[in-house]
Length: 313
Image 1: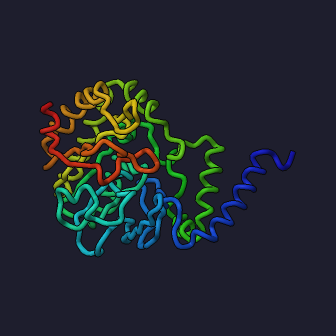
Image 2: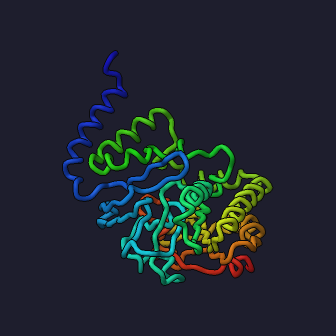
Image 3: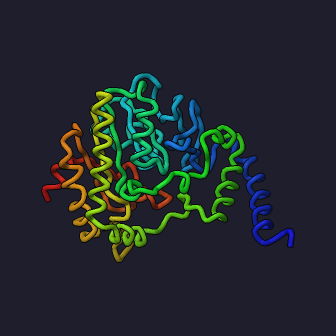
């Protein structure tokens, strides 16, 4: 039949989104990001509004897609994925890095922008990289992204040359997501739940995981040493490390998983002496710690500590 079930669903979906698009010119309901085969970034030289719960958040970007909060002058450059981007804030003073760093930030980060994508960004834009940078490693997902075979093509729906059009016509973004879900792509909207992520982590071979971390760190060290860049490294504990208690009022740490994480990161990241400073963050209040998508820790709940101190216990 010409109008199969999938086609009918797509047509209905298209009509709904065309209507809602008329209402979203001022503030869109998703974060726009795309890839260029090498790394993922936000729209360049843009200012746009993103709905987050009941809040409307302003995003401003420079000519490379870096998010800034104040001015676009010389800033402390930060690299990573969506956790460090500050999905739930539009005030730098509310960003967890402000606890430790007082300079203005410019954050080159986007969903599914993994560790090797950060390296690619630095290589492709080496003349614009400052001598001191922060690299964020999201243990929730970056532990999986350093494995051979991981590709942004399987996780990022848009190419970066589509971003300007998506800002003008937001409904097209959801059409692209829907189309690729039918093709069994693994975009962020289909990410596994907390228990599934824990199982994925527990099924990783520790020897292989340590080896992949060290391969990544060695490559990062070689490139930053060649470019004369001092790296401050910030790790985030996984959101799936925290489990709701029986009364569903707060979150508790899964101690078995935390022991396994320490066994992996302390002899790798903590022992890498080429990195000038190593920090890790934890939650400072274990009630209501997750953002609305349940995949990130809220910025206001994060506190920073030296990785060496964390590894003592």
